[in-house]
Each structure stands twice: as structure tokens, then as C-alpha cells.
Length: 195
Image 1: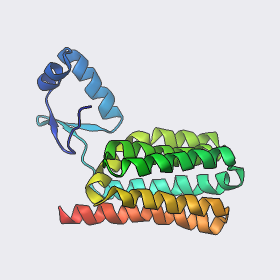
Image 2: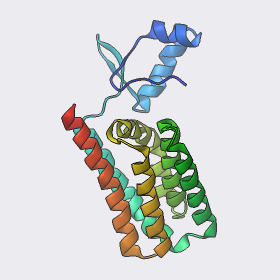
Image 3: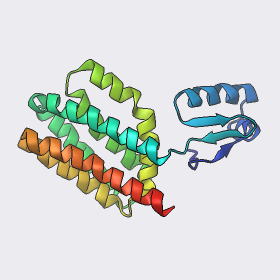
Image 4: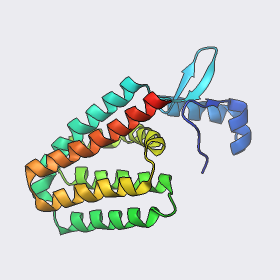
């Protein structure tokens, strides 16, 4: 898997050579990626991997809170043993990734954890909005890689959220999801101000 740095310049010629495709194929791919908000084309300057501003991150976090708090409120009475088993399995997989510090896989598991909760809410429009936002969420998680000093912190946050869900106490769960997202915001913004 090829990783690109946030803000990295992408040249059609280099990408075409790297992936053994034509430049027109790369141009088409760039158009798709730009429409998905993953790259930006600056006139007469080139194409770059998106680099979120502090405002972009704040807006994305605000959107996450709006979507996920509502999803949790709707999902809580509907969560069954199936969802709890799925969430527990995701946590086990996260725990297994701690030693290898495979951030890519940890973030896949992070998204899977949140997707499991959101899908349980039963509101197809909330689910669709959350799924449409997955691409930006993945980029957002790329920023988190720089913010967490240890993958065990990411695991513990999800474990705390899982334990809150097990209580089925609405106040505890909504506070836990907000704390979880706000903790990530704090980490992200601290990292941005340091750089």
C-alpha cells in the first residue's frame, strides 16, 4: 500500500510511472479523488494531498458529534448481543494490533467500531450520511496518527465507550461518545499548534 503525506504534491507523470498506467488514467483518478475531498488541484501550482486546516478539523468533529450522538441515542435500545459481540471482536483485534502499532489497521478497526454502532440505529439517512463522510473520516484519522503517542490510548478510548454502551444508560453513553470525539479533537488541535 502506498502512503502519501498530508500536503504532498502529486505529479501525474510520477503516479503514471509508479502504477504503470497512462497519464489520462491518473487524471481521471485525480478528478475522483478531488471530488471526494482527498486531493486539491491548485491552479498553476499542481495537485496536492489535502491538508485540513484547524477549521476543517473543527467542522468535521462537530459533524461527527451531531451524527454519532444521534445515532447512539437511536441505537442504544436496539443493540443486541450480535452488535456487542461484533464490538468486542473489534476491540480484541485492536488489542492485537497494539504491539505492531499498525496504525492503518487500527484506524480501519476504529471506523468499523463506529460503523457498527451507527448501523444499529436503524435510520437509513443517518447511516448514509455517516458512510458518505467516511472518506473525510479516514483523512481525519490520518491526522490522529501524528497525535497519539501510543496505540494503547486509542484502544482504551474504545474500550471505555464499549463499557458505557454495555450499561445501556443513555446519559453515560452520550457523554462517553462526546468525550471520545472531543478527546480526539484535543489531541488533533494540540498537534496542529505544535507544528
